[in-house]
Length: 273
Image 1: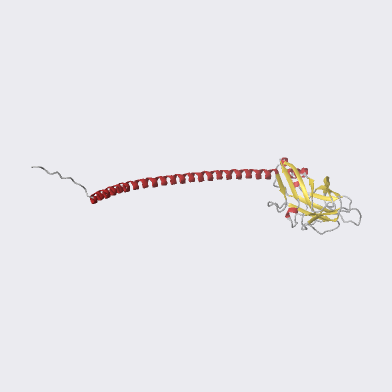
Image 2: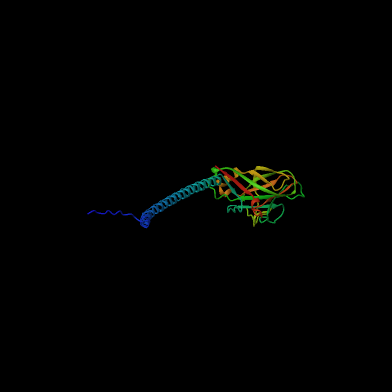
């Protein structure tokens, strides 16, 4: 008996079915691999972000550290500079840095009126019987200093505010030889009930002098280094200074320690070693 052979010939629909299954399988494999790839990308992104954040943090920290270091350095440098300036030069002037140790007044010839509260110090020469002699007194408290050798130079400065009788003149500087009271001193008395030994004040011979001109609103200065050193060494002998002119017709007015403009008040500048 002869056997028949059957040949299987797939139909078009069957072939389409196989193709669809193959595509579905490929899609499934792709979908399984994508999440892993996405996760790795996200992980890498997070890692980069963390790294950048750490880098920025380190940078900020370094910047802050540098800033602090610079700040400390500037502060120390400025502090040392100010300290050196304060040590090298000291200015004593009422109303400045808490100082209030300057006392002053002026004496009007043949008059008992006091001038300790006036805003000016008047100096006028006596050249004839009809003229009025005016002398100014000033004293600085130096009790805060205890080593005279540290004073390299001392300068007294008076600010000219008016010249009722203008002109050039020499003003002599004398050491006062007895105590006096700013609010009570007058031509006859050093204080209430205590007369001067000589009318017009008790003082020694002139040890210095300075020139005044007809200019106003200028500083007249005189070196008083020896006086300051002696006053520091022997505080009990610090009775201050007296200013007056020899025979002349000139009158000069200086700002006193009570003057309304603090910057114009008498000042004693000490340059320290």
